[in-house]
Image 1 (spheres, rainbow, N blue to C red):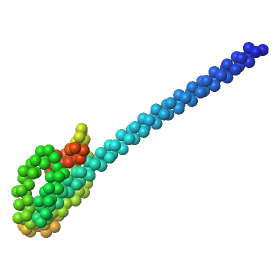
Image 2: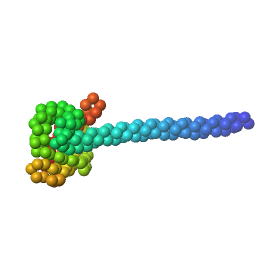
Image 3: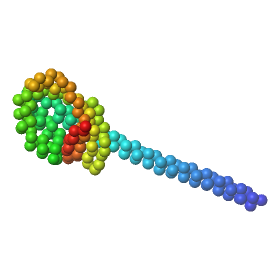
Image 4: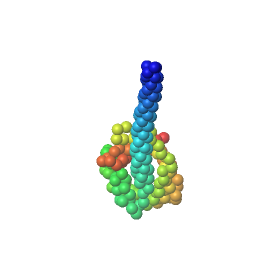
Length: 172
């Protein structure tokens, strides 16, 4: 009589072991899925933070570029240079004294504002941002708060941990 009881106990033990193994497998599966989702979430958050840094730097650089006053032209040019890098910075710096002279002579006052922007593409350490902006212009030639529209393709490059303008193209 002990043999059937032993067989029943083994069957119960085998069912319990199978159920335990199944629960452990399910717990491991959920743990793996949770880790994968958490990693994906962190990657998305890092990308969003990077995108925000790129867009903020592009907004600031473009605003500096289209906001110039005759009374503060040298400082305004320096703001653009501070937010630039690479060939764009070298070219702008080479022309900056002539630019300052023209702004002062023509008594130019412009105030710009970025209306919309978006990342067109991104690569390793750089991104291309499309920017739509407006500015109001007043000058000695007769412009009095005249509105100007700007469509720009701005390349933003990582310069020692900070995104800066490395190329600016006017888009038709």
